Image (cartoon, rainbow, N blue to C red):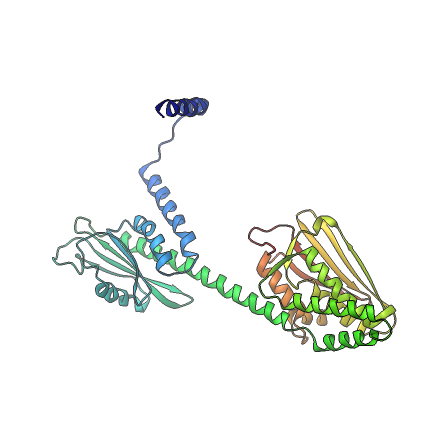
Length: 392
């Protein structure tokens, strides 16, 4: 064992020799006390972020509080949610019972930082040390307090109250981000559920009527269409998936269009031209289908004669551009704006646009290019890849 360790040590030392020589030959930079204090503060501040982004509870508080105590340099630091102590770190002869911490937490109901010098709450009194209590607040609502105790060996300075206040502001900001993210996620899920529940009774009736018309004349085709209808509706109502590949979304769009073609027959021509390199891009489920449904409704139903719907997928290097075009009645700018805002009565385009922007950022989403009597093109842009967005 010792021989093996000796060999391993030799390999490590030999492998690091060149790097060590470079380090030794380079001038060493020694941080000043001020810069070292700044570096330490930044380190501990950033170390709290991953925990507090999960929200404020006992688990996240216990993981964040050692870094918060190092940041404030308090002897003891407590984090409360206004009703109970979530975490306590450090040791002191101060009174840090739950009852005392609850009493201190109530100090900040006015939204201000409170300072009590002189070892507040300890069993003896003295001119030094003290306690600083800073409020935690999100969206103008008190959610708790950060309580810092300083021992009698330490002289409480005005800067200490400021540091504790900044630490409390850091906690509040991160918790607020988690709340906003949760609200956004809930809204996105609600919008997706609304979209799933939005399958038009008109579409269902027309699809079943078209299938029924084939039962006697083309029974095999009727059976195939019924299978397409069942598969499409299952896809629309599956709740466990938020994202799919573009290839899968297109697969179900084609099923939807087969049902519409059974209804319109030769009146409807469909052209699909999608670059194979974009098929593995991930999109929110039911993001392309509402665009195609909109094209059928406004491009075919509302205008007589033979109509064409085109679906084009273009590789834009880091992005994917999808175009759904119809040669129907078109619309003016006012109606296009109403369609995008959901004011026109239909929420499909508005819903999809919000979900795209929520998922990928404000630079992505939908745009409408249309003129009266010249058809409509709806453009959807998504990134080819986005960290954290994966097809289930």
